[in-house]
Length: 334
Image (cartoon, rainbow, N blue to C red; front, side, top):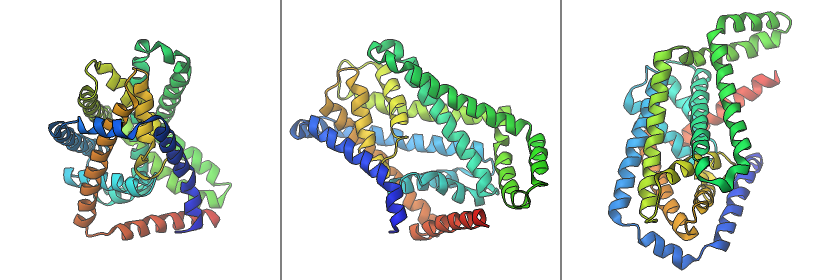
């Protein structure tokens, strides 16, 4: 492994290590094991089934973002992106851009625009879920301004992307005027920027964009149902809005740098979120471990099937990632 790769992953690994260390200091291992044992097998099967359905819903999101993509292609590529996130932190978006390009009949740069739209909508929904539950948690009132700022920033960013897509011809003309004064910019930068702008066109089609948003909301609803079932199994006085709050916090928490698969950060975020409702740390950690393990197992299985189905290997996909990065670096140095 190259030294620069280790250095790039080091902050995330340190964050995960610190979270795991903190959890180990506040959690009793025997109590944790007993908490996991109390989650019956039927609940685990139900959680796994809904997780699979949610993966299917997220595949439909990509069918809506990239209309030429068929369901099974979308399903397996989506899971391949999760598989690589389980192996290499923050690699899933690159995998989507590379692997969706061929079935979508687009360039990887156009697909990146769809990745940006998907992630921005996800974070806006997460921040919204976080905010709508604030009236029930007075102890967190002090962080409301930060949450509102976060929501507004992504909403403004998405609005800018929409404006750029709506006025794409005007933006391209403006770029070409700049390019007249700089040959490198005209030949190397403008074509790539134009591809990204073209990828944002999904936002200008109200029917298509509404369909994308609907299926993203369905995905989030399924993820919340998973938490509702999980939390109700560990806490008899559970309230459904605990799941809404926790799902929002989880999405924001796992955006932090972490080790592969978000190990430690996912569990620590769930423990921290549920502590606002007085849920015992061992119970919170127990259900977090179960849900996270189900997610990692299923996405890894479907991801490997997707890799095999495409006639690829994990090493060949990694080589394609390195090749695309090297090309971008070489072009930037010219």
